[in-house]
Image 1 (tube, rainbow, N blue to C red):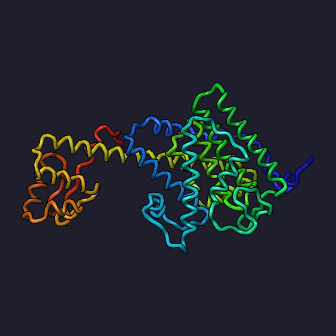
Image 2 (image 1 turned 90 degrees about the vertical axis):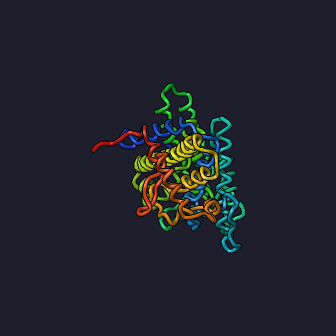
Image 3 (image 1 turned 180 degrees about the vertical axis):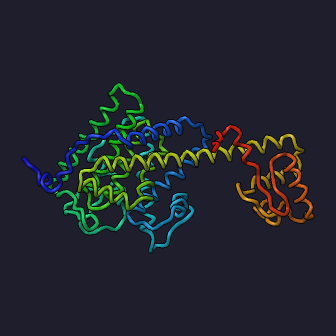
Length: 392
């Protein structure tokens, strides 16, 4: 028996024929970077901080796409319980907290090692959590399929409500079959990664096309994408919602690619757009990880150097001064004593020459460069001894 969507939404076919083009090259690069990240040892505290940073970035991105106006720093403070918005803005905070709870649960479930399987119940559960406690239009029931035909923006119309249960069942069967094929195939992890990535992006695309819920479809689609990547065992959790950052940063292209995929059948165009962004986001993330590792190495090096110094007040003050100095800029001499509250106390009631003695000693130890006229800068670049040099 034919379905109404077949005439009005002919692009919903549950078929995909990937092209071996630039997208494949970018996915090869993305796989390599995921392997790099997965093999990077981090101290537990550093790993936890990194995970919290990128979780907040993902939460901020996926809510910002839907119009949430909170900044990334606002989101960080809210999730760390350091900020609470006034009642008139409470819905913005609730949106952020709801998505955070969804992504945290995805993280916990992926850590259990159980292969991810998509079901209508899973989708309904995520949508219910995303919309929990948020004021919606009268026709919207969180976690329930829409009973109203939805107009997305002013152009795209979602699938007919009577077709939604059938379409979601088909989607779950299709995505689960793709994932089962990946797990059972005797192929390398690089090819498995490509197939998992395609399944994640296709699931996102199809939720956007079907628009099964009265509200929260975009956030539900991006949560599903994250769950497939995180549950694959091939993408580190810290990287699993990077695509939301990419979509948010390139929002006009995001909507344009979604539109082109339905209007012109250019599914490969959307996958290529996602692959390009994922590789770029991973490169940026690796840079962030390396920067954090560099700072940890610098702190360790400073403490190791000071082990040969007399363990007195002057040594503690010099070490505190050195670690407070910002990287890559010259700090004026008259700012040194007030970089932190601790330094202000350490230099209180001391003669001005104490600063000169401290900076001179740090320079003798090879930890500081600069002078009173031009300012001072920590020699953190000493940590770059084994970094590759690029010659022009």
